Amino acid sequence: MSKEQIKHLIERHLPEAGLVDTALKGVRLFRVTEAMPCIPAVYEPTVVAILSGTKEAVLDGEHHVYGCDKYLLCPMTLPVEAGTPQACEEDPLLGIVITLEPRMMRALAMEIETAAGGNRPSRGGVPSALTLASWDTGFTQSLLRLLELLDNPVALEVLGSGRLRELCYAVLMGEAGTAARRAFGAGNEIARTIDYLSNHLNEQVTIDDMANHVGMSRAVFHRRFKDATTMSPIQFVKSMRLNNAAMKIAEGKTVSEAAWDVGYQSASQFSREFKRMYGQSPRQWSQAMQMPELLN
Image 1 (cartoon, rainbow, N blue to C red):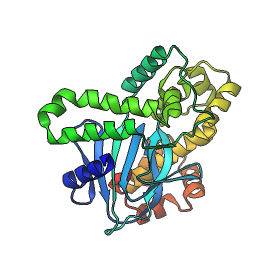
Image 2 (image 1 turned 90 degrees about the vertical axis):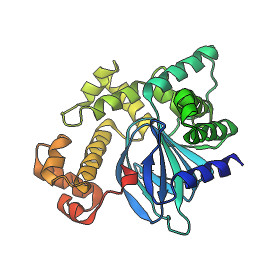
Image 3 (image 1 turned 60 degrees about the vertical axis):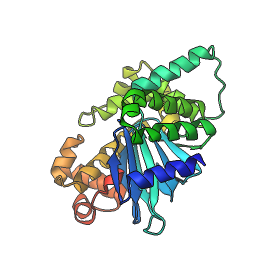
């Protein structure tokens, strides 16, 4: 019943297609009524919950297709391709995007570890950088309680941060908890490196720079980075730069401006690497694409 209530809440607050910010900071609702192919995007740390239809995210060739049976956790900034290839007027995609505030997530992860005496059990294996998790009771009820605040401005003002904290706790304790705690708990060096990279995309950052930033040897850093993101550090940096550039071009920047913004000093090198990744030159991409707002 809770999922139906959440769906009705979204339909009531967003009767037309679009992506809207709510009065809850970091919480957005979306409705998509036409198919969108997977195109380059950069995901920030977020949770995406679908109530109707299906959505797709692709990381390093691995496809993650999910609907109302799973929610998506992206625990760190990642270069992906994202789209809604099956959305239509008769079967719209309805959902919520919740931005995860790193400071809150780190504090919660540490409190959980402390309360568990450092013995929080692992759920096994190395989790994917993008993780699909089941809607357990804790997640469903906390999401409903959060969204119900949209109908009560006074309660939203008083209880909003607490309800968001409750939802983040449900994520950390749920099926995606291992991936979330690895990104936000003790030993979150790779997530910190990615934050550093995101803020220095227009600079020439080497593997040694990244390893030194978190106090690791080059070999250990390379192994742990690939475990966490599925990509080597150099591949990750290239994907982040090219995805950001593709988004900037689709939003109206010139090819030269986009290349310069993400750290390319050679236009020919940028064009070669862009075409190798997307199968089109930057100018062809500029002519063919419009950036859907949902994928920003």
